[in-house]
Image 1 (cartoon, rainbow, N blue to C red):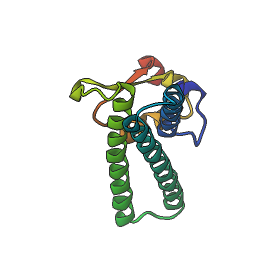
Image 2 (cartoon, one colour):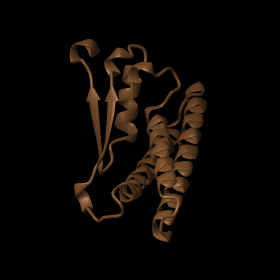
Image 3 (cartoon, rainbow, N blue to C red):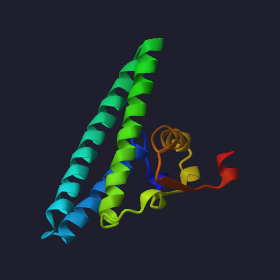
Image 4 (cartoon, rainbow, N blue to C red):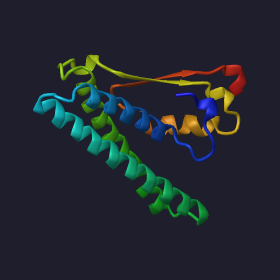
Length: 155
């Protein structure tokens, strides 16, 4: 993902979901005559991707509404709980996604999804928002985030 081209309102999590969707669609086309188990796995990943995307949109909408008002502690806690639920569902999605991409071989905890995010430091206006999104949503098991940044540029 090229973070230098991201604009206000674009979300690194949404971009990752979109990339994963594209990869699953390629997988779906490549195995048109697939066995029933693989077909089932792909349908489950499609459902989970759609569900996660809807939840991200709802979470963003609620955040905008809360930003316009004075946030109560209960609202903040509710928002945090939704983020945790989202992360847990995303973690399950990654497991299913890796099962499809590896041909459903049982690699256990030895298989990871690596997400490369390039040029976060070049996005002067929204770079720190991107880092916050990575911290909030992408700290899950079996996902490695590879960032390329010039530390001096961030400072």
